[in-house]
Length: 79
Image 1 (tube, one colour):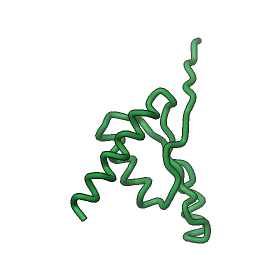
Image 2: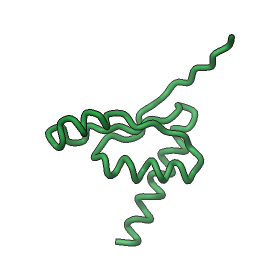
Image 3: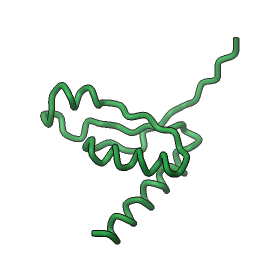
Image 4: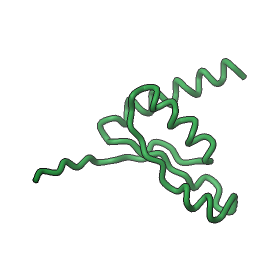
């Protein structure tokens, strides 16, 4: 049996709302991502601010960062 492992990197850490928005932007760019820390947020509420992380495969890190920046730029236009 062969298992393939991928290195992962954190591309964002912040409030759960932002992480969810960025994860959607990555999904639209066909980039798989994982959210880490939601259980901490649910357990402690806002006691631990900016404790939710967004992780992607290392080979997708550059593309993910660019997708997040595009999303942020588009949000500035709409605001």
